[in-house]
Image (spheres, rainbow, N blue to C red):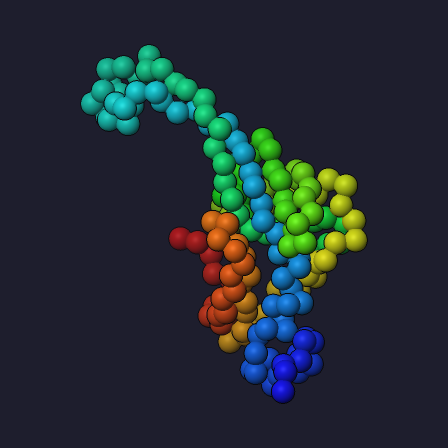
Length: 171
């Protein structure tokens, strides 16, 4: 007998397999390609405290293009995407690729380095698959959670976990 391809209708059905949940959510998971120009010292001695003391400000710098790759999730069908600050922070160019291979340019709407969150707007997007945000106050310790992504461009990955704590702040 083949497995059904529908989202689970009850918590009991979730215990059988996450596959229907992943199939329903995966179209809203995106790959994010970001580029930014960074200045780096051209000297191998620039990071050495001894040499920096004597040559601070006179060591040549070079500008290089740095690429980053990450994942995000579409949370509104008109192209609102949640991702990480470390993926898009300081980027001069952002390209988002959907699971169906459509591509969009994106701009950062909100970014917070401390929480490592970023909100992007896809240019010219409409009628996209989206995962609605849930009220975070409804989350409870012990809830099951899934993370779907594409780390390092290796292909889609899925992992599961359990909410272990709520309302913690960084130290």
